[in-house]
Amino acid sequence: MMSPSVLLETPDLLFIDKPSGLTVHKKTPSDPQFTLADWIVSTYPTIASVGEDPLRPGIVHRLDKETSGVMVVAKTNAAFFSLKKQFQDHTIEKEYWALVHGNPRPTQGTIDAPIGALGNKRTTRIHGKRTLVAREAITDYKTLKTFQQFSLIAALPRTGRTHQIRVHCKHIGTPIAGDPLYTTSAPGPEGLSRLFLHAHSLAVAAPDGSRVSVQAPLPGDLQKVLDALH
Image (tube, rainbow, N blue to C red; front, side, top):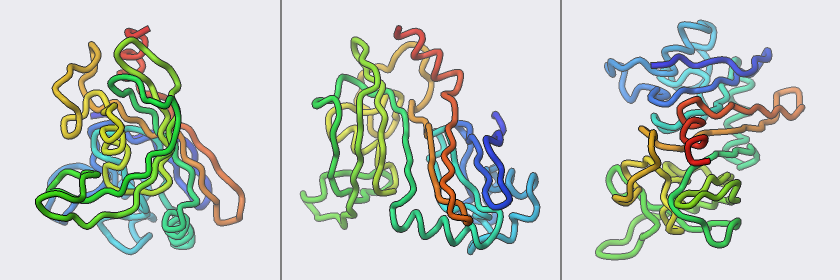
């Protein structure tokens, strides 16, 4: 497994590029897997005391295990609570790149579909045999490039629900390639061995009031898939 890399470091914030396959934090103290939180504490010991949960030192958001890309970590408690409020107020700008089956119609737009939990999965079908507790979920998207059977899109979530982009892509009929939970049986592109979802950029307000925007380059394995589609 690849280790995280540092994209940008300031006195208050740490922007890292999380590789696919790395879980962000343990669910219980006895969880044996090595996580991003373990890497943070071993590399930056002072962050161990930052935040509200020792299992999530400095961590105010997460990416799914198979999702790669940029994350921000607070190096101080002041930065932690500032970031926490920004996520709660939806003022942080996030852009993800995803390769999806088919071609979204329209090519850009807004998906406004509440999401409810159904076991380990999430769904926009909140009424049926039983009514699920739904939470507001809104994602803007735009098509970046179209291929014969796939499209590369940018997804900009306004809210931060679990699996939001994955569920919303399925909702509009263009599930993300390589997604074992929400993709149909249609085969993914040749060479793709995992979820094609990457946190491309993140923009936050630093404690001094300045705006900081950081990008994570597309990982080599996903870039090879795109090159092959060309």
